[in-house]
Image (cartoon, rainbow, N blue to C red; front, side, top):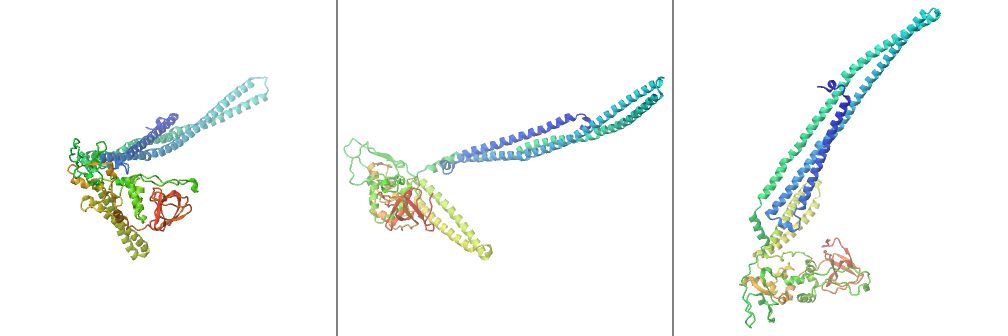
Length: 623
């Protein structure tokens, strides 16, 4: 069946139908576009949802990720993220394989349709012109025939009238002959035009129009076939991602099956086990007797100074069990919160700040006074620089390097984790050193490939890094061995803050572990007076700090304002004074400066203008 033969007279209807077909294709393109937008928005929402519930780094949730149930949930989030990626693939494929291709195809169809109907209109206009010429020739022939007939009748009347002269009769005869000749000529023209029209009409309806309609029919069939292919691709695009989506769902199922409640329970034990022994029975206290309470030989009050003989009243005594004991009171005193460095004065004159800026002050505790008196009596103040820096920075939430603030079991795990991390870093540096060594050998054999001297410098840096890492590993392994009981307890000179916890000669607090081992009931009574009575001998601090070398000068500074260093650890400066910088501000607002070899201390960073020597050893920038 052909449109050219069957629909030869349906030019207008075919024009409307082909336009409708293109509109259907455009409607399908719009549908695919909106589906692609839905897929990409759905994928975006899934990704945002997965990201919202992902474990945050350096947070409590990261510690919780060691449980199998949390791992399964994280796997579900990851698989959901991959699932969202498949919806993005669907959107991309629909856009590129369907929408873009069909849009280009529609443009081609529109152009082809426009060209075919333009040819059809030209053919129609031509046949209409031929028809008009035929009608004109026909009317002229008809008019000439009528005029010839009238001329013939007039001649016959003139010829029959005896009163008409011969000349008038001849004139009428001549006029009739002329009219008959004109009618004959019009007849010939009409016949010629008619034959031509019939030929053009035959060509129009049997050649031109069928060819044009056949092109339109082919175009329409291609449109329909292309729409069918697009629908097939539409389904195939979804079918292609089904296996991957199935894998995502299988991963979620597998992670759910990997949840182990027993293992999670064991993880809870490993996470929170302190390593302490449960407390024993509490001794009966007989208040009916007039005598003082008999104290167990293993009680912590046994280490109290002999001069303390005040009787305890029930209202003031605070009996506590060992696992819930307060942290070392000595460290809480040393690391008590300090005030931030004072802001610079409004003017540079001393009168603008009558009392001077306030430097960080320690809480008024008896033990801190004793330590401050002892420290300030030492001629070599620089021996305590590390301790002071610890006091300025530790109270801001930092963790001791040896994790001495944790229970034994948790401390052992943290130390082991730190040792593993350092070993991994060391291995990376060793691998880098091996690679650089091979590169250096290649450069030495083939100088045109590179400079061996530059590689040698890098080798030196890597070697220094390896040495530093090994020292760190040895340090942490020593602490780990101490925790695991492979080494005896020691007075570690490098652990300035943890030494305050573990010094053998400090009174009740340091003997808590020993008391636990010898106490039958595992309990003791902690009194406020006990918490502050800690004996510190000068020889212990001398052993820890006297061997420390002075810090090198890393730059100079100029005092912008006068500062009265009234508190321990600070130094007074005058406005405009030039001093040496030996330690930069490490984020706490204080900079360590030096006036002479024996006179140094901290000043607020905002009170000075620092000029660092970038080439100086130890010059660093802390953010």
